[in-house]
Length: 496
Image 1 (cartoon, one colour):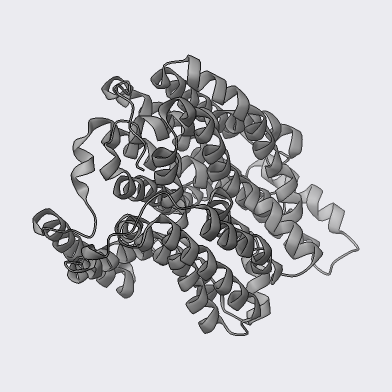
Image 2 (spheres, helix red, strand yellow):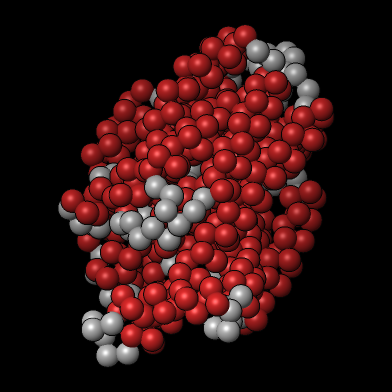
């Protein structure tokens, strides 16, 4: 089941690192290719909270087997598609069907294992859930450079078949309750899909299309608000709601979900910003970027046993505070980048961030889900995982918005100082023109263009440094909520 979850989470990042190659292969425009990711994320974010109800109706075994089999089949369809329209359709189905695997694993871990065994299980799940986004760019870059973009999807086939077969034959610890179909809330499902789908679209496409200046985004923002109001009214008044929100009455679960949201911002945000810096400023290809990003995954893997030991001996609240502090420190160390920054300049910040992830993930899982009764676990696991995905989506939207604003600000400020009347500026232009003399027809124009490119590059460097500072601030601010977290008391009985 954990391998299946790994595939579903990995598929987001492994594809994002090679979108340009897929765009070329499908002859798609820049606007069209973004839907390869957006369709997957919208569909997945709808399925994650729905999985709690489906697992109660079908049982964990049936739901997970169907999800793994469907994910594998749609992966094959994505690999052999020849047009952008069919690719978007298959990606949406892949995200929707595969999305059920992620929360089901979390719920199963708490249902199957007694409290004293959960620390070790949380290490495995936490390592896999955080390693997948970290390794995505590395693996995606390698597959695309060595074979072709089709292997981004074909790599799922063999493990997908193995997971499907083994889960069907080995996982059987609960029974489905078909009577829940009698009062199945189709209206609630529709409102939830409209609400979450519209929110995901707005935050994904907003930064790219000038937010509410774009007609489609403005309309879907209104749809999101209206559907959101209808959804919350429905789940709070209907006798058999599609999603049970009463889990948020548990203070630990509510704060744990907030921390899951924040971890989503950091997990997906850092894996987005660093490769973008290396591509735009340093001009590296996807494989070179993957090799640099591998440092985070390596230190994360090395820290897993340490985190497992600490989770048994240390107050989980202290462990979480350590993790949040380390993650904030890791991204803060990145806030002094220059245009020459490469592997060794990024090594220590990535190592610190890699070590921090397990210290965050393991205690959050236990603090959020460890105080809930077994009957609420499946539903609560869906909500908990949804918060991480929403954190990633909203975090990326905020990052892109800040990036656009700060890049314009820095470019204007640096441009204001490029007055040719200043001796330093004129000396720089003369020096550059001398280098181009005899090589181009107009050395002065070539020098001016090169200086403009240098200014644009430095504006981007300052922008990325600002983004890392903002992210560090988010994680250090998260420490303010720590006094509200209670230590898990009584153990939760296994749901057999």
